[in-house]
Amino acid sequence: MQTNFVSPNEIRAQFARAMSVMYSQEVPAYSTLVTMVKSINDEVLKHDDVLRQQLTNADNLARISEERHGAIRLGTEKELFNIRRLFAVMGMQPVSYYDLSVAGIPVHSTAFRPVSRADLAANPFRVFTSLLRLELVEDNALREAANAMLAKREIFTPEALQLIESFEQRGGLTAAEADAFIAAALETFRWHQNATVTTALYEQLHETHRLVADVVSFKGPHINHLTPRTLDIDLAHRQMAAHGMQAKATIEGPPRRQCPILLRQTSFKAIEEAVNFADDKGHYVAGAHTARFGEIEQRGIALTPKGRALYDQLIHQTRELASQAADLTYEAALEQVFVDFPDDYLTLHNDGLAYFEYHRAAVAIDAAVTKETLPQQLENGQVELVPITYEDFLPVSAAGIFQSNLGHESAQNFSAQGNQAVFESALGCHVLDEFALYADMSEASLNRLLLRS
Ligand code: OOG
Ligand code: NI
Image (tube, rainbow, N blue to C red; front, side):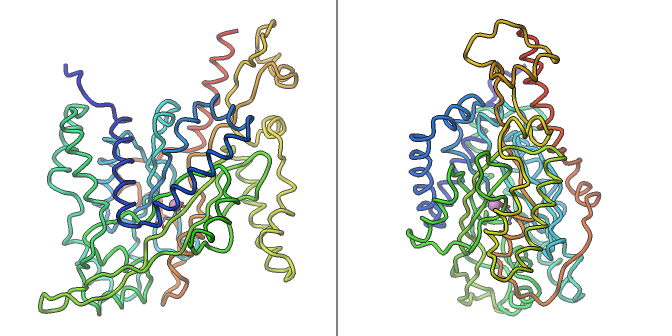
């Protein structure tokens, strides 16, 4: 038996670093963002002892400065099938199904990420992965032309496919193979300045929806953003402007709180990049394409289905209120409505709204911890609640991010129903249930505590 395989965690960490280097070169504003976020995080940690302790207790401190998520948009079912195999080499699995058609965007998505506590602590790199739903394009001729373009392309290098196969057959990659895999896999995410379509086809696709043009016109699914995690998104949002970045108007997600929940995100507008379109004679014609952008996020505690339902209801209420009351900004409405979401960890726990780990307090516990004594011991601080970080995405926020960098004008309204079955059949497996993953983590931590007592 071979034992000298590199762990998927190590491959993922190295791949995430390589991707970050590549994207810094491709989109220099991303570099600026990373530097800015790092100095904000250092400042926050210097002054917030409670947060620093919490992140340490949850084994989360070391990962913050390297933490990123990226996003890609795929064109065919086969591409989705193979990207799942590629991410599996790095220990990343598909979690959750996101239907973006509810927001008029013709894609459905999943997020590939590590799932266990230890693997997340090693490196939480995740990639929001969307599949274009070309069947929603109404214009038959255009749909056919797009299909033909996509059918012709191969987004993986032969070497990447071959190393994926070795991994599947032997259960791992040697150090030399892992290095080769990282280099080969990176090619799939690289930007291509030469488009594969003519200016005329590009314009038609673009008119239907910018996203359709972004997916169909290129050789591969270029990484369209890479997002560092900030510990103070309000400060980061304000500083973006000072660093010459044009931030979107509002921060997506919940308002600023004592106990951050889920995910707050903001982005700067996509940059215009020079591309060359093909003409009929095989020459290139200069043009431009706008798709790639920068984003930052702040992550808070994962919510239970009950907490999530409350969150969704309050976001809905906020939208209603902000659209009705002309003198109320969206932020003000958000603050006002979210007063109804408890903002201390003990209440979030006792009301069953959020997921926690249970840690024995530093002060000695004389009595054993049992299910019966736990509530009292939480109350008197002998057992500490450590928030479990939300590792996933929010469809409403994602829609807001898509829209902010795609623009709104499109010839067709793509509102439709989700189709998880079709998505999963292309993927080649079911997506994992995020709630089950958080519930398992919480339960495992409780069991560790009960056993030790
Ligand atoms: C993905 C947008 C979703 C997020 O952070 O919610 C996303 C995309 O634009 O392809 O990345
Ligand atoms: Ni994103």
